[in-house]
Image (cartoon, rainbow, N blue to C red; front, side):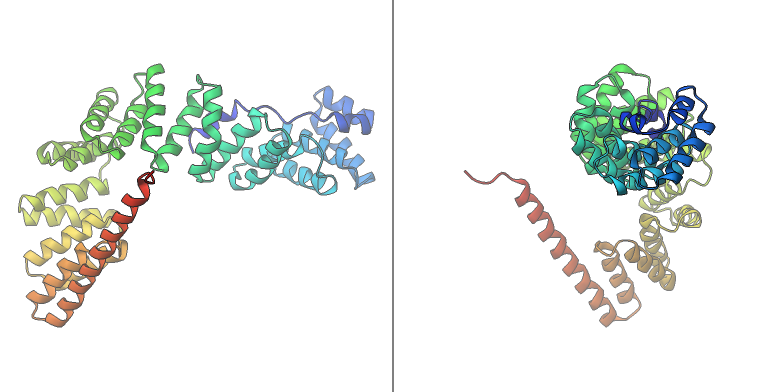
Length: 376
């Protein structure tokens, strides 16, 4: 959400209300026009108290409160105004803006949709709505609303960045790559954009190109956290384990205790049959984080090879808890039970392994079939 603050500067102030000005006392209007906002607030409160059904006065009170950055109170005033007169123009937009500015992104969505319905051509409402979806982590909806906004304002790099990250979150990697490439055209020295472009390319299985982007990011910002880990992961994925280990160690020099770097270093040591070193890295990783499946899966393998079967069982069971859909931990657990002379328990694990393989294979086939165009 770090880019939302930068984009707020693009959003206009609350809409002034001509309807309220024609109906409200001149003193409140004059005070507001003179910039004497606390006094204008008192005046509008007095008007609203004198006539609780005056929707325009409540809306004008909301505008004055928003100008003072009292967004929670402003939202309350706008809601009261809309409850009295839902047709008041501009108020849904102002309510959505108030909710957005106080960080209540999910609450901003409904009034902003109403504002866009009132005025379908409103770029402000569409922009705010897309950003609110992003803030509420509804990334697919964010993409739908932000794409036309970015097309109409192609020089707005902050909005383009939010669109690109939304594409990345929804695994629309081609969309993300396109947006990040355009960001890099304007700012080729942006390490962040190189990283995110790399992530998009990795999602497209273009690993070599992803590595090149991360290497460029490393060159631009060698002390930036996470760059070395991301590059190390791509090397690891490409089975370039020596290069990967160097990057994981570099990440640890910047962020001591980086759990993922420790876990993947442990995995590399295991692949090289250095069991004690692997166990050391994996245990340290687990001390830092309890949700890294690879650390538990590899630790189970290490302890199994060391014939420390109870520890291996606990590690594999935790790996299963973290992702019950994967068959590998069940298979390895079955092997442990066989080594312990418990064939019935092993049989159960192997049956689960088979079932999960069949289920995953069926899901893959279904995904492949539904992704193909219908025959003509």
